[in-house]
Length: 299
Length: 278
Image (cartoon, rainbow over all chains, first blue to last red; front, side, top):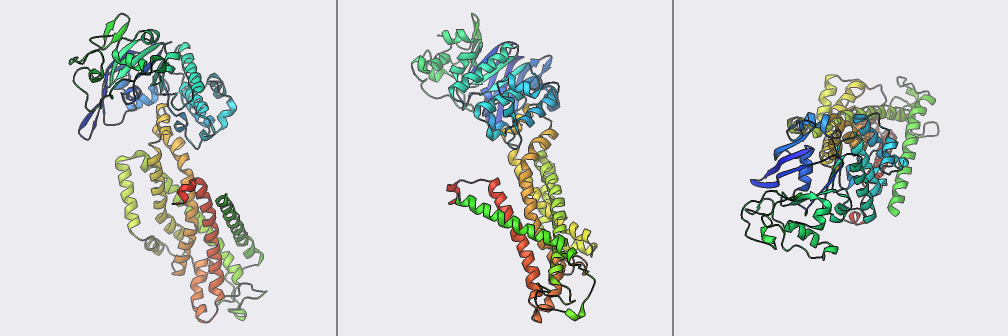
């Protein structure tokens, strides 16, 4: 999937919320792209846009092309019959709440398989995601967070989609379960799928991501191979995020992210930037070697 | 713990009482050889005795057999009304909540309009048009009571459709119809079934009220309402049993169903101890 110039705006009581601004990236088969950033920077809105799940007051620009179809321009019927579940599978956060509470996991997984790819075997699907098939006979409230997350991943795989969007799939899970979920997602990428992982858990991203995109105040500010970005961050915000990790010295970035309704002119990170506070022009992603960085004065 | 025990006790008492009443309604009129059209002038308004435990009415008919035969008719009417009202309510309330927009507004204004007229008055209009038969009584109650179920189901659907599992179904490629009948309706079934059960005693009382007013079932049919209507003159003559026993059967049925429904409601909506203290 090639995403170009994706912008999402909301009009809320006269105010304009710039949730995503001019995001361009590619989801490549066999790669796991982790999209990281602080809460409220627009990551989940970006994922919702790729599934056509934005509310009615959203204004979307740009394109997201997959097999000749522009997902952003597709109508509701096309999204329901060709895109959701078939081209793009969603792994949600807090999976228990994403399962219908009055039906067993098996009933829901069966329904998804029957609608999307009837030749698939439900039990085999469960085994593929590391779930014992007997657990499918439980109701959602009888499943632990990790089990529910694996059911949700199985549901996302029901239509064998080439793209998996995982929106904070590890929130609320303990570290061993986070690692297990991340390994499972990495395995899906190794099978040849393109995986977009949205997370604010940098440790989880470091464990499994092949590529890393960093988002700040609705914009992508750095995009490159995960190992390189973690080893040598170029954008001051990426450096700040890594510096805030225990292994980075526990040094939080001073200040707070701006409100998406009141983004400053020029570089939105300028008020918090340790490198320069004079970047008043709007930096767009520019190539620095193999990396794309939205900064006039990279570290 | 005490609350759970109280719930279990209510359930046992409710289910036990209802079982006895239903068994009585099915077996007693048949076993006692009740002939509703037969008048016994030699045994008019006899006080309760071993031969006639509930006494006899103004037509000399055994009130025990007649009260239970009346209960059978009242329960039949109530069950039919509850089923029809629930099906209509779930259908209209579910579609209204799921579709939203103008279909929702239109359906809810229609419900408001129906609710603005007292149900009994509206029921009387319907039975007045087709008076004197079972179908008219069922229609008069069912067509005026689906609105309550529709409101409950619509409110539940409006709340449920914002829940993450609906988003998950949509993002999994489910059509609007599949979301409605595979995810929303199963989730509202407990609430709808609850309203149906609570409607049972209400419908029994409604049927009783209509028959008491002389607008319900034909006089020869032994419904509780008909028996109570006939008993008005008997009370003035001191024949208290003609009112007391059929009323007791009616009250026992209502309490049994309501008791069971309240246990079900408590299990459906578990509350914390701290909430119960409020």
